[in-house]
Length: 75
Image 1 (cartoon, rainbow, N blue to C red):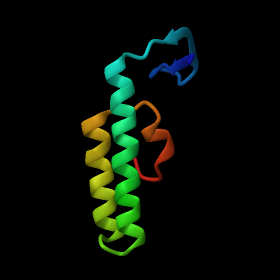
Image 2: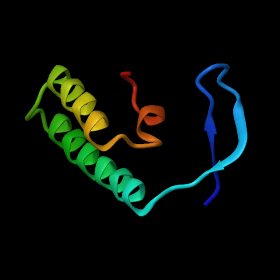
Image 3: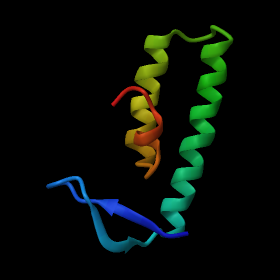
């Protein structure tokens, strides 16, 4: 897979492909599995939207996913 990383200064694509380690890939998978589980809990009204948002934020901090921030509605 070839990904390109946004630069923080001007938010344009860099020319260098982003190299993903096995650990980063595992973190990405873990993030999405945990997120899916908490979405299910929210849908079943076992947790509130506010609780979900807090958990989701912690989840992003713990696993630092590459795609997670792009796929969530709360920064």
